[in-house]
Length: 143
Image (cartoon, rainbow, N blue to C red; front, side, top):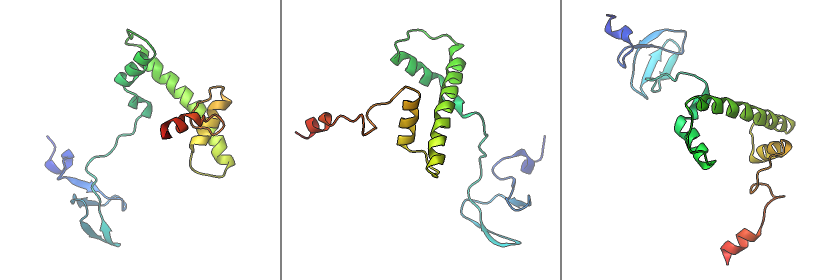
């Protein structure tokens, strides 16, 4: 069995961002005096493992979408197929959004970028665009 500091528990040693030197684990907000002066160490107990973000679309979420579409039973192999279809569709939409963002010399994707991208694909979304906005609903709410 490995020794306690190399087991990876919260009291073990952690490498810092300064060249891989090992300092004892400190609590969040404590100041460490290193070779280059004071360094404030944040809480770094857990390291996030990067994986494909499409796995964030969970089985219950896919099941809820299917229920909204009127599906009664769902096969076990359908979840990966739905994730693949969703990923390809989102990639296509976001590629078109990036074209609009780069043309504006901006760094932020706006609602209008998504609206114009969807209308380019022939799938317009209603309720966000001033061209498709119906002002009658607002007047009913005020009176």
